[in-house]
Length: 290
Image 1 (cartoon, helix red, strand yellow):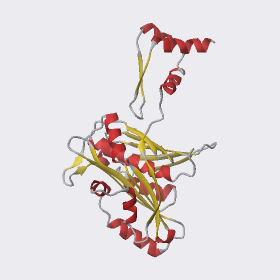
Image 2 (image 1 turned 90 degrees about the horizontal axis):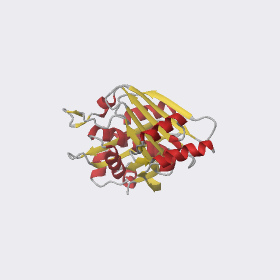
Image 3 (image 1 turned 30 degrees about the vertical axis):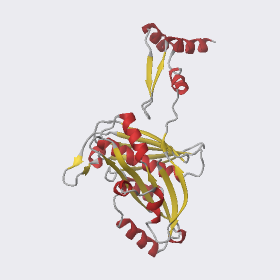
Image 4 (image 1 turned 120 degrees about the vertical axis):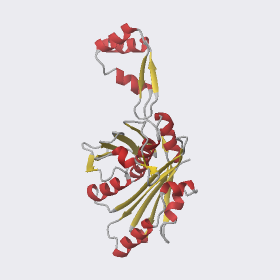
């Protein structure tokens, strides 16, 4: 089971979030038929979405991330909350690009220049929205920039997804280290030193690191405050999809009925398919007339 951990260090002046997301990233890969670079891009984004969800103050708050780039992936979308559930998709699932000199997936090239948008829905009249230009398209650097600019929280971010030759995800995870108000110069130096020594997150996870051990090995006084399970889980349902069909004009629904075919709808977030028959559609018209 994938896990997320929250910890502190440096006498409480450093806050740490870590997450292991191998299983949920591979589930997204299977659901969306993702090729390696698309898997890496979505996996990294879902990992940071989960950690940002853990920063939420209430269970009602939802974090919506959208990355729009000029590269072949086009769009990356991920949604999460404090519950530990995450879902997401990419605009183009069949992307495979790699840096030949570095022997790593070229997420930055696949995403390209563009912008990163974060919307936090807090159940209030207005949502918090933060938008920044992409720094590299590699996702981790882009979110480090976002935290510093939009949320004024100095942060270091590491994200990684390791994909096997058969396209399966063998290791995935993420780490966010944040300096809290009042952090001293020595805390900044210690954080930079700890982050600089880090192996790639995907390599650490492949070697058996857990969300807890990633935190505990960062600083001598680091301690884990909380852990929780995380998983790929969508909120879609047959009822919600039927409600979506109910928003169509009556003429459109009648045209579907006249074609006498089963209607298939697909959820963008999880690729789940729902089938609706002629009686289902007729029921929508009957309810509208009633």
